Image 1 (cartoon, rainbow, N blue to C red):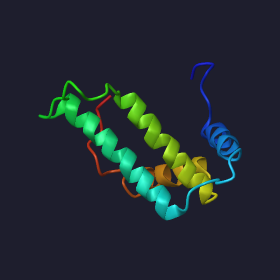
Image 2 (cartoon, rainbow, N blue to C red):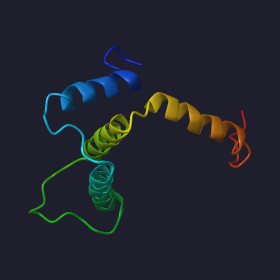
Image 3 (cartoon, helix red, strand yellow):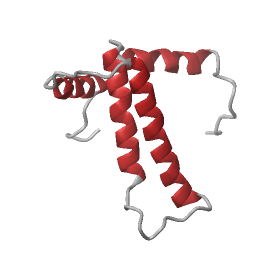
Image 4 (cartoon, one colour):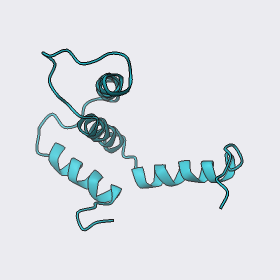
Length: 111
């Protein structure tokens, strides 16, 4: 990690501090899911432009997958924060699943 790296806990706290300055606060879970779906659609569009058969129109704004992933990540953090979900704990749970239940699911690279 470089010196500018932030832990997931720090990122969740930073987003919470940002959202907390507004009276509206976090959106409802349903609205948050709609926002996440919207951001995923924008990421899908970028992926399709770079790797698919649909080039950008000359009138379309230039965005990057990094921007779109960042937008999706921000909304995911907002969603987790609004439901009081610790994303570090959620990540640990999913990695435990991959390392136990799914440990033999994929072909490992020979060392």
